[in-house]
Amino acid sequence: MGAMSIWHWAIVIVVVALLFGGKGKISNLMGDAAKGIRAFRDGLKDDGKDTPAEGVSSLPRTEAEKDEVKR
Image (cartoon, rainbow, N blue to C red):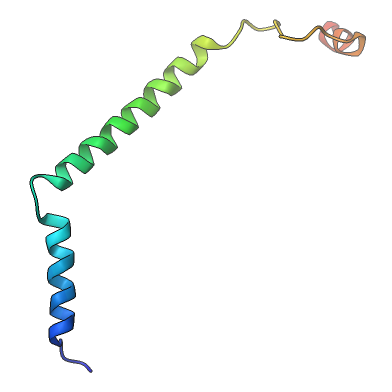
């Protein structure tokens, strides 16, 4: 039970082959992650530019809201 059997070694070899095998799989994966992070940061930067000016709303204000703004 404590020793590594052939099945343990087979599983380890398969996992290592999946992670490190092939042509640059990990570098492609990291590049895609970096593109996603960059797109997220660009989205946060653009978020403030698309909002309407302060005090402008898409719906007309009620009398109670107008009174709140005056205070």
